Image (cartoon, one colour):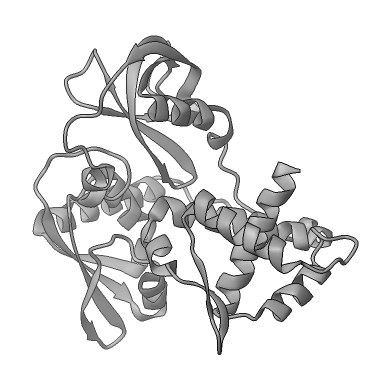
Length: 305
C-alpha cells in the first residue's frame, strides 16, 4: 500500500509539472485514466490534499492553487536548482511514465548503469549515518584487490558510471573510487565527520568528469563546426560554457576549468567537429594525439583488392 501511494505522489508531481497549471477536475480526469487506478475511481478532495501534504513532507515540493489557473508547483525553481532532487524526480517520473505505457516497454530503450544497483544503498546509508566502510577494491590497472576502510564523502554519476569520493587512511587526500570496481562493501561501527566546510559541488565545480586535479583553472576556447553547435547549446560540456564568437561555419565556446584527462578525452572524442584554439599547450597536446592516431592507421597495410 505504501509503495502504491508513493507511485501516486510521483504521478501527481509529474502531471502538475508537465501541465504547468491544472484544475482539480483535470487532475481527476487524468487519474481516472491512469494505470494506477484500474477501477477508474474519482480522486476525493480529502485524498488529494493528503497526497499534497505527503509530497511536501517527502520531496519538499509544494503544490499551491491559483484560483484562476489551477494547481501548480510553487517552488519548481528550487527543485530544478537542486541537482540531486531534480535527477531523482526525473528518474521517478520516467518510471511513472513507463508504468503508464507498459505496453510500450519493448519500444523504449534506456542506457544501463551497471554499477548503480548493488552498492549505492550501502554507501548512502553510511553517508547518512556517518559511518566508515570496509571496502574491497580492485583498480582496472592492478591484478590484485585490496581491502581498507574509507570515509564516504559524496557520490557522483559520470558517463553511466557511479563514483564515490572517499577518504582512506592510506592517503592524505580524498580519492575517487569507481563503484563498478568495488568487490565487497560493509558498513563499520566506526564514525567519521566530514571536513569542516566541505562542499561536494565545490570539489567538482572547476573540473570536467571525476579525475581530481588541483591544477590551475585555465580559459579554454574551442571552435565547433556549425552543424554541431546546437548540441553544445542544448547540453553544455561544463557549467562555465559561454558562447564567445561566431564566424562562417563555426562557433567558439569558452570554458573556465582545469583541463583534466577526462576533458581532453572528451575533446578528442569529438574528432574533426571540434578544434581547440587555446591554450596553446592544450592545442598541441590534442594535435600530437591526433597525429599518433593517424600514424597508427597509416601503419595498417592496404587490403588487397
